[in-house]
Image 1: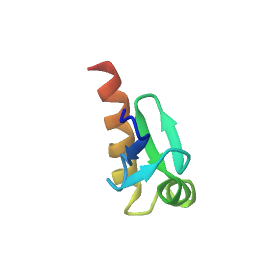
Image 2 (image 1 turned 180 degrees about the vertical axis):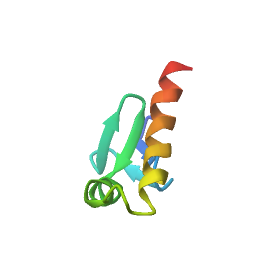
Image 3 (image 1 turned 120 degrees about the vertical axis):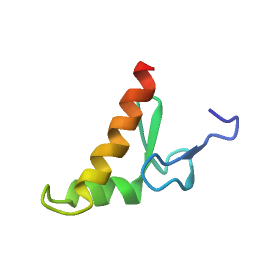
Length: 63
């Protein structure tokens, strides 16, 4: 983690400041991505992408 508390979103890859998202284990998800994820239906084409990105957070923890 940086001293300035900036984080890269594990979903969109953009840099966000502390407090502009949620931490999950060692990962970070910005608020816009979080909002998009929770409203995405399982039949949506983006759903598998979100699952893949979330798995990456958990796999990084177990590596």
